[in-house]
Each structure stands twice: as structure tokens, then as C-alpha cells.
Length: 296
Ligand code: ATP
Image 1 (cartoon, protein in one colour):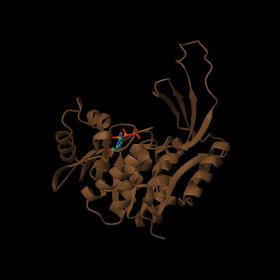
Image 2 (cartoon, helix red, strand yellow):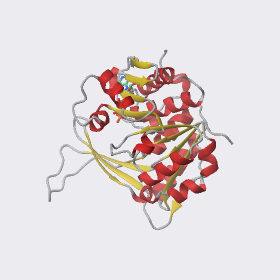
Image 3 (cartoon, helix red, strand yellow):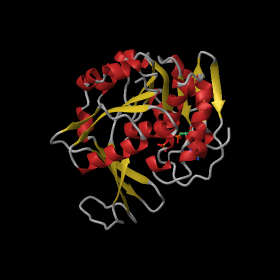
Image 4 (cartoon, protein in one colour):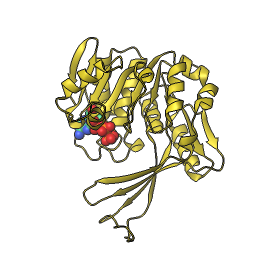
């Protein structure tokens, strides 16, 4: 089977508690009831691509615990191909511990768990799948050797979402078409102030990848490739919760690239998916079907 998008990436359970204020060191505070949601950037992007009608598969690792079962269930329900979602015995599934303050501000601790065990051997086991995919997509919540191995095997287009930001080896960067970053990640790569986003996208595209996309929240995105620099406006959206907007954007971008769109056209579609995702709470729960996209 030929997949539109194969994501090599993370699978996390998001454990969310609301608090009136953060505890100081040594202090205990009472929070709201615990909410457990499927998450992780890899799983989120695979689910978002599948919900948009794409054939999406995930290469990843979970533990043999309840969180792993929850994540598998959510991915299967979305129609994500899971033949290469492996289980690591004796290791917990990745977890994001999220406290939400009174202003909706998040503080997050990620415990990688089984994600940290994803390596080149997993990529070798999924070699045929990765080699035949139209687009292979990564984020950096899994170890870099797995990402580099997968980029080496990929026969199609490679998309890297530099989240969380970290140095990228030149060989990997040279495969990225595009590199996708938000403003913070762009500033990290460019060693300083975000500055004018058009200049940032152009500078990033000159720094090694074949093309670059900088996402700008409610201000849309900027695309830079061989055709020049293009600003992509964001459709207006009554934002309820921006969690998952970046994952929805990147997944939609990958899907349209897989279907043969030019980068700027894929980014216009991706901006519609990002806008749709801010209208509902949560990450995977907020990802749109095609019918839920705002008009172009
Ligand atoms: P997050 O971490 O919140 O998932 P991010 O920082 O990775 O997101 P953003 O740049 O905030 O990425 O958002 C990704 C895309 O989603 C934007 O490029 C834009 O197209 C869309 N988007 C985000 N916020 C809004 C908004 N308030 N209104 C319309 N579109 C939005």
C-alpha cells in the first residue's frame, strides 16, 4: 500500500490539570479533575492527516500500559496505519504533564518514555513503507538517529517540523522540503529576534533546506522556495484554543504536497486546517474533516 503521509514521530498521553496557581518548590496545590487526552506531535499529525481524508501511517513506539492502549485506540479510530507502531515492554508510554493556569496558559513537562526507544532498527523494519510514501514527516520529539535514518530511506518528499527546536545536521536539513517552523523556532535557528517573517523565511530557505515555511498564528504563514517568498493569510477564526493548530497545519501541508500541490497552494490549504483547529478545544479533538474547513 502506498501512503500519502508516513509520520515517524512521538506518541504521548496528555495529562491535563487546571490550577489556580502553580505550586512553589515544596508546596502542594489542589487542581481540577485529571483529563487524559491522546497527543504527541507524531500521533497528532498522523490523526490530522487521516481526518482530512489522507492515507496516513505512523512509525512510533508506545509502552504496554493503559496510555499505550488509549493512544492506539485513538489512532485506529482515526484510520491511521499502525503496522509499525511498536510496543516497548517495561517502559511507560510517553506522557505530557500539562498544568493549565487561570489565563489558559500551559506549563508542560514531557516524559518521553517509549518515544526515546525509537531508533534506526524501527526505521529498518518500516523501510518499505517509508521508501514508498509520497511524503515522510518528522518532528523532534523522537531521537534524531531515527529521524536521520528515515530521511535516508525516504523516496518521496521529506517534511521536518522543528519542534521542539534543536540543531539539525546539515545532511538532514538538505532533505527538508519544506522545513516548517513557528516564529520561536525560526528565531532559534536564526540566532536571535524573529524580525520580519518574510525575511526570516527567506533566510531559513537559504540556510540549507530546499524550502521553508514559517507559521505566524493568527497572521497565517510565509512560504519561501525557489519561486520566491509568499505570504499566506490566515482565514478569520474565533479562536477558542490554539492547541494543535501547528500540528493541523503541518499535517494538511504534508497531505496536499502528497497529492501534488505546489508548496504555496499546500500552505493555503494548511492555513484553512490550522484555522479550523483553533475553533475547538484540545489537539486531536480539534482536527477538522474536509467539510469543516473554512472557505478558501
Ligand atoms: P501550536 O503550538 O499552538 O499548535 P504553533 O506555534 O506550532 O501552534 P501557529 O503558528 O500558532 O503554530 O499556528 C499554525 C497555523 O495555524 C498558523 O500558520 C495559522 O495558519 C493557523 N492559526 C493559528 N492560530 C490561528 C488563529 N487564531 N486564527 C486563524 N488561524 C490560526
